[in-house]
Length: 251
Length: 251
DNA sequence: GTGAAAGCGCTAACAT
DNA sequence: ATGTTAGCGCTTTCAC
Image (cartoon, each protein chain N blue to C red):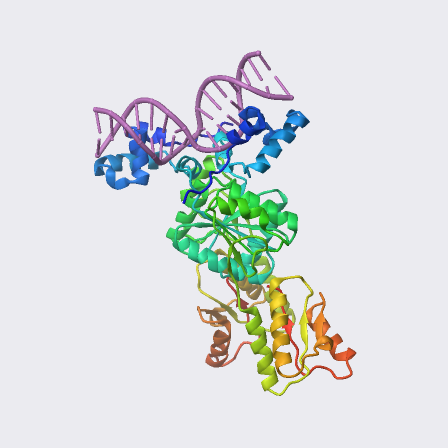
């Protein structure tokens, strides 16, 4: 069964009795078209259910589509959702659409999805880097595509980054516990080789060292177990169990 | 400062010493190119950091981009996140990218964002309908773009829908409480004119009526308050407070 | 196995 | 204010 054809600007122009360019102007610079002409074109467009082809427009203009790519690790992490929600909110205010992809936290996935997003000519690429290296994006950066790292800095790539103060936050948290009188403060986290974890652990150590408690080896529990398990084990395995503990979640 | 130019297939072909079409074939039907030629082309592409232009390819092919649009109400609702996560997971397995937009739960927003997604030639449009009417999508459906409603049926539009069994679920929940001996079972929900709410309320009423408790007017609390507030009020305002209650969340 | 010409739908540059 | 020509980067004929 033959589907009806999609109407093009040519069809609209023909029906409205104007040139293709005039019809085009109605969409790109309407003030340069006489009001009467404009109405005719719009009426024709409605009749034909015309929808401008963004692909053709972008191709001709040589720019990017009104989209911004967001590349995250895995979709199920609620932290990424919060990030995506904030980004989407800002973008929609500017008439941009969010294009999302997830790398499933694999090196190969990250590059593959970044490639897909870039070949769709997104206006910018926001990413939460999870691969060990983002140098594969350097060419794109040199071509002028903004690449921005979120939550973690990119590695081997000159890119702006939006980061949290992980180290200072962890330090202050530890200081607060120290001020409350705690001395044996445990630090629990997954051993993932992630920037945020490094920073938080460093902040914790700084605070402990400043309080004269520099030897924290016995208090640091790096494992992939859920926090509660780790807490229980930490409490049982030690002669002097911690009086405060510290779950550093991934994100 | 002049940015370097993006390499095109022509550049690659020239550097590799082949015709444009041969270079093209390396990407679309590589088995039809001699292995040696293919390697030359790929080497040239790497040197030039060539990335095929999906826009141009799609435009010429006359099809759709390898993307699927998802239109949701508001980004902050965790239910939509779960939906998006599931969709993204399935899509990525097929090499498709998710393009998201949120209508901010306004009629005008829904149509505007749907338009943006469609003019980017998504392969399909998945949507959680929130406007009162989706007939504006009928033209697109006739053009062959799959439009699928998620969580709520579309109105005035012939479209497949993926729905939960809201009515049966609510009925069964009420029955379970009835079987547990409860009689005054309250139903709390926002009064939003949403399909899911209608269905759940209907299921609740069915179960109550079947138990000979047809007059549920005093037990239904429809307001936009947070559930806890409504519970408190329901308990205080009634001579005989409910022994079980029912928060029906939006989603 | 490879190439030349035409054209997808649109807009920039230059008319008029 | 409106029209003409050319061409964005790619793929589809149809050649060779």
